[in-house]
Image (cartoon, rainbow, N blue to C red; front, top):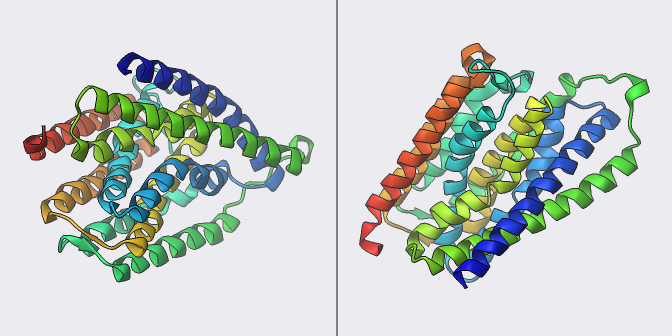
Length: 319
């Protein structure tokens, strides 16, 4: 079974990467059809669909009475998105050492709001529990932020040349199809990655924070790599940041609303603290020369590796 799960993991990962190639193509066309910035299309359209793997896992775990799996998956995937995903995408960018993810969108100038949002789970869960009231607060602030982004996007909308305008319905239909394939392949990739982790004896307590969290980042990783290779940096940024905000606020809030849960406070200190710290580091890099260059990308990858080591050290009793 070990080799079967590994083979299926690789197969669905290949499907995932190919579907991401088509997703970048049709999301770009949709941006032109809607006269919107690519950042906004990816922040609202791609990111919302990209969160389906972790949304499915976290909501199902809450319904089944094991909210901590969803909790670990959501916050763990946020750390992965802000560090190893940003880092790998930066390394795949064109150019030499000076290459990287270029920050073009004017909407990213309000990076302070992103950091404050990602601090809320840590503040609300500092006492070792997330109640329904806490969940409601997370859902409300996340929804308000998305609404604010939508309002701001109307001021920064990019006008495209009419000659380049793409048919709206055709672009939307093909985008939905390619995203459906992307999400399905991502879900199956995560499933077989989880099965493989169990086969080789990874402790269950680490599955959500490591294997599932990293696995559910595959849609935004695959999509963002394709985007930056085609010089669509704003698509990459919008997808990753939209996913991070949705995971850390709305989805985590829904999990708490379905099934409030408690945990050792140290878990939130490490997870919530890592999310906040990785956000601060990432946005600091974005501010420097308006890009995340390849050296900064390697620093982010190192931070994620350190985070994983800390998780194993804290949970070594379960190994």
